[in-house]
Length: 581
Image (cartoon, rainbow, N blue to C red; front, side, top):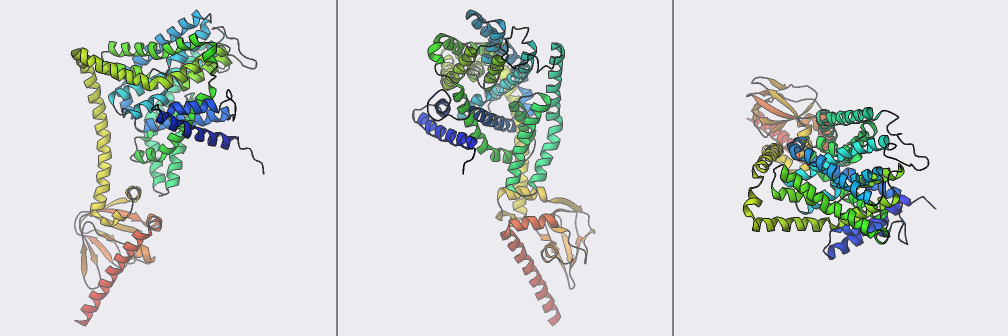
C-alpha cells in the first residue's frame, strides 16, 4: 500500500544523518552543530543521493526556532529584558546601522545597486538567536550578565528585522527592484504610503508587546493552573505547546511579528507561573529535536559551488560577519562604558548570522533587489560563520585573558561601575524569582512535613495537590461538618484543633490530621459533627477532585482507606468497651 511519506522520510533521514555526523563532529572535537550542517548539505538538492523535501525541512526548522525561543522566554523575565535595555537597545540599533553600511559599501564594489546593498547589509547585520543560545548553553552563560545582554541585544535586532521585512516591499520600487514574475511590489504594504506603513507596523508591534506583558501574565498562568488541576501529564504538555505555538502563530497573523519573537514573548508570559519549570522540562525534548532541523535546513540551502565561483566575495562577507560586526559591537559596548569582558562576549555572540538573514535574502531575491548570487554568498557566510563561531568564542576568551595579563587595571577596572549596577539589578530580579520558587518549594515541603501521607506521591502529584486544595478557615466554636450532611470534601488540618463529636465521646484532631474521608469513600452521609476548638486553617480536597486524584494514586487511596478503617475499628472497640463497663 503506497502512501505519501515525504514528511516521514524528511524527518527520519534528517535525524539519522544528524545523529551520525553530529557524533563524528564531537569525536573530531567540533561542535555537534557542524555535523548537523554537513548532514543538511548531504541530503540537500545540490549533492547526489537522497534529496529531502527542503520546504518541509524549512517548516520543521521554524518549529525548532519557535520552541527554542519559547524556552529562552521561560527563563527570561520581562523585568530582566528591561534591565538590559540601556545597552541592548542603543547597541543593537547602532550596530545594525553600521554593519548595514559596511554591507552596502561591499556590494557597491561588486557593482550592485543600493537596493541589493541594503538587503545584503541587513542580512549580514543580524545574528542568529538559535546559534547564540547553543553557544551560551555550552558555556553555561545563559544566566550570566553577559549572556542576558547578548540575548537582549538579539531580541532588539529581531524587532528591527520585523520592521525591515515590512518596509522592504514598500520601498522596493524606490530602491530599484526588478521583481520576478508574479511578484507584486508593495503587496505587503497594501498600497499604503510608507509613513503609514511604518506607523501601522510600530502600532501592531506595540499592541502585541502590551498584550503579552500586561494581559498575558494574568491569562496564561490561570490556563496552566486550570489544566494542571486535571492531573493529566499529556494534557499539560499539550497545553504548553498549544500556548507557545498559538501565541507565535497569532503574533504573526494578527500583529506581523515573527514566529520566533512571538514564541519568546509566550515564554516570558509563562515564566510568571509557578508551573514554568514544569513547562520548561516538558518542552525541552522537543526543543532539542526540532532545533537540530534548523541547522539541517540551513545546510540544505547551501550551494558549495559558490566557494569556487566567488571565493573572494564569500571571504569578504565572512570577514564582515566575524571581524566587522565584532569590532563594531565591541566598540559600542566600550563606548557605553561597560567592561572589556562584556564587550568581547557580545562581539563573539554576534559573529554569525542565521534565520533572519535567510528570510531577508529570500525576500530580496523575490523582490528583484538582490541577485541570486547574493543569496548564495549570504548562505555561505552563514554556514562558515556558524561553524567558526565556537572558535570566535575561544579567541575572545583568550584575548580577555591576555588583556587581563598585560593591562590588568584596564581590563578589570574599565566599566566596572556600570557593570556592577547591571549585575546588581539582574541579581535583585533573580533573587525575587528565586524567592518565589523557594516559597513554592517551602509550601511543598510543609505539605509533606504536615501530612507525611503525601510523601507516597511524586513531585508533580504534590504540585497538583497544591492546586487542587481549596483553603478554608474556621473560628472557635464554628461547626465545620454536620451529621447527616452529604460529604462535600476531605479536610486536612493545616493549623488549629477540631473536635469530632461521637456518640459516646469527643475526639480531638490537631494539625496534620484529616477528617471527612469516610463519606467520600463510602458515598454515605456524615456520621459526626466536627467543631473548631481553635482558629483553624484547612486544606479541602473536594469530592470530585478527591475521586479523580485517588483514582490515579491507588496506593494513596489504600492508605487513606486503611487509616479510615482503623479509625472506625477503634471507635467500635471504644463503644464496645464502654457498653461492657
